[in-house]
Length: 324
DNA sequence: TTGTGTTTTATTGCCTCC
DNA sequence: GGAGGCAATAAAACACAA
Image (cartoon, rainbow, N blue to C red; front, side, top):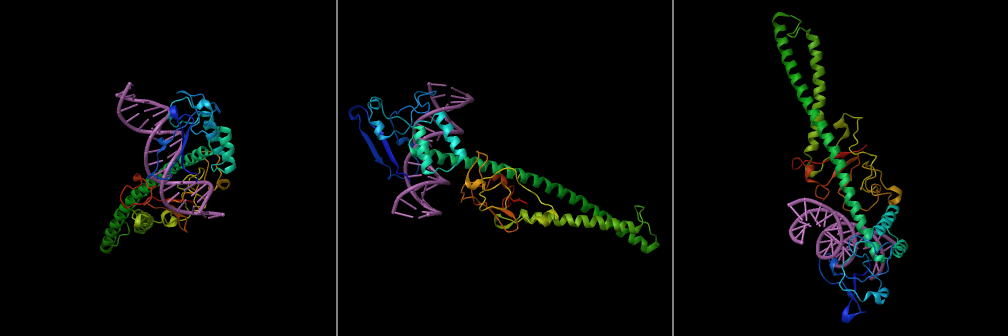
């Protein structure tokens, strides 16, 4: 890492002097206000801007020796980059979100900035991209979860209906068998022959039993232990049917190396390069809490920051997603 | 004009990799 | 051990409503 030096020049009696302060000491992060600079040559419209004259925040020591820089008042605050500078940086970031030393130097030269500034800009830009990407991922996963939830609720209702049907038909069958025992008639209360009633009951029972099985499978999901659960695609979906909980046409922040089976988005595009803000797939997110098992199931570790309060409608319930 | 929330620029400390 | 990356954070700059 480049040393955290503070560079500022002084005015008045100290005109022409520059101080280099080593920032090694001091606790905690931050502290941007400790930096000062003097003006510099205009680069990429640096002198433009809505509020006062825009100049690069950092100024090379040799530049500071020029006399024009000594007659201004100090300290100057840190300045924002001009739109032109930002535009060029953005373009460069879209080409490649990592910065090799040569490219950093070249960009700094073009923009009239310190290489350190370019590096910091890229670092902050990567952080912004990551935040946005995580938000997008969350939104997509949440939408998929909501869809699945709705489907689950519908199945549950269906199951209740069929269960009632089974109970009703069973009762009728029992009544029928009771009357059969007394008068030997082969027609039930509904007017159907007894054999038809048995078939109907059997069919309804099988269907209901199947759905009960599904619901049980889903109940297991909802009450998974330890905040995580495994989705058994076959048990849940009756086999052969798979849900892509996440639109596979969109990219994700999730790194391809670790989540290679997941279709949250196309992974590992061009070995880490990004095409645009929505189009990366690169990035090393050691902290990502999503992980997969052999059955192709995506887990969410609720102990991490990715977990969103909205995910849990009940404590202990999991958020889960599947992919094909 | 001022208070407040957001964005941007920058530092610090820790971690990983070579 | 040095270089570079990232998370956390500070503070200036900016936006905007009251």
